[in-house]
Image (tube, protein in one colour):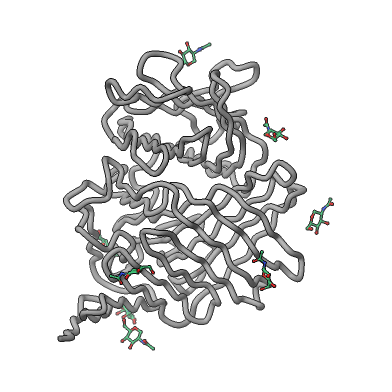
Length: 374
Ligand SMILES: *[C@@H]1O[C@H](CO)[C@@H](O)[C@H](O)[C@H]1NC(C)=O
Ligand SMILES: *[C@@H]1O[C@H](CO)[C@@H](O)[C@H](O)[C@H]1NC(C)=O
Ligand SMILES: *[C@@H]1O[C@H](CO)[C@@H](O)[C@H](O)[C@H]1NC(C)=O
Ligand SMILES: *[C@@H]1O[C@H](CO)[C@@H](O)[C@H](O)[C@H]1NC(C)=O
Ligand SMILES: *[C@@H]1O[C@H](CO)[C@@H](O)[C@H](O)[C@H]1NC(C)=O
Ligand SMILES: *[C@@H]1O[C@H](CO)[C@@H](O)[C@H](O)[C@H]1NC(C)=O
Ligand SMILES: *[C@@H]1O[C@H](CO)[C@@H](O)[C@H](O)[C@H]1NC(C)=O
Ligand SMILES: *[C@@H]1O[C@H](CO)[C@@H](O)[C@H](O)[C@H]1NC(C)=O
């Protein structure tokens, strides 16, 4: 049995025993967007906003940071946008809400990026926990399940071909807990977050204008969305992910324009969640400055970029994890910046770097900050 529904603004979806197919048109749609902020049992990676009007955004994000000592500055980030530029002003101006962005760093630290705008529909399918995404005409697509994802790029016009695999090593989660039905998906006011792959044992195999970029590393995939412009309630945000010793970690520390801090902590070991919480105090992320002194918090646009961050993650009572705790019931992780990978404007920066604990665990991370108030 197949039925076809026509939602306001032309987002057509076809549901059947084979799942749901969403066709997302390239034009900015008129009318009100509706966003989903409570999780369903399935469809973690299905579109969450419909239609994409001039105020809304919905995107799928993938990254990998190298954990090979000989190429520790290599990284790649790919984002599939269904977002209007007024809603997410960091996007380059375009008539299309559909675009695929790729940013890479080569092992020597050289930065490169490319953009493919879609003039045809994007198609996202969702069946149980499985999804596919094809941004027609761009050469960018993904296929994924609970076991992991593969991003395939065949975009000679942008100069890129190849694949990136994301075999999952940590289970999916939402801001406040595991990926089950009925979870709150708001990480900050009207900003949705679903983290399908908090950590992956990724293999990158790309050719960029004929130059090979091949490395293994710590991979990650999530999505964000909102029916209102990104900057509506944001003052600052610190987000990142990495692996330190045996632990997969994802952090979110979000300050809204009314001064309220929203956090999300995720820690897993051997594929099992140790902590997945949005309770205030479950995690704090603070910038660090020269000589280990604390850098300014909260940051404003003119605040210089920090040298790193200090993460304090509260562990559930009696969790007793091995080798990481400095104080009773906490895991304290220092983040040291190795390379800034985006430096287009002062409001946004993306970095790669190292993680360490005083007990000797080490690892790598990819992370970002927004500071958007004057
Ligand atoms: C593109 O999407 C629109 C509206 O969602 C739909 O009417 C149209 O049939 C789609 N086109 C293709 C080629 O799938
Ligand atoms: C939105 O409304 C304007 C003004 O009526 C119209 O020109 C435009 O085609 C509409 N956009 C879409 C995608 O329907
Ligand atoms: C888009 O939808 C949102 C949520 O319903 C609404 O607040 C906003 O005004 C709409 N934007 C436009 C440009 O119509
Ligand atoms: C860094 O590596 C890239 C890709 O191989 C190359 O194009 C570039 O020339 C290198 N830069 C330096 C300074 O060696
Ligand atoms: C999802 O994908 C996995 C791995 O490809 C496959 O084993 C499974 O049958 C798929 N499930 C559904 C509901 O399509
Ligand atoms: C990388 O991609 C190239 C071109 O598709 C292929 O020949 C090569 O075998 C791939 N390497 C790995 C390690 O998968
Ligand atoms: C830095 O921040 C930490 C944790 O937030 C705090 O314990 C410490 O006292 C601060 N140090 C300085 C020099 O302000
Ligand atoms: C991160 O670790 C790599 C490899 O051990 C090292 O070369 C680099 O200097 C470190 N970066 C920082 C900022 O400590």
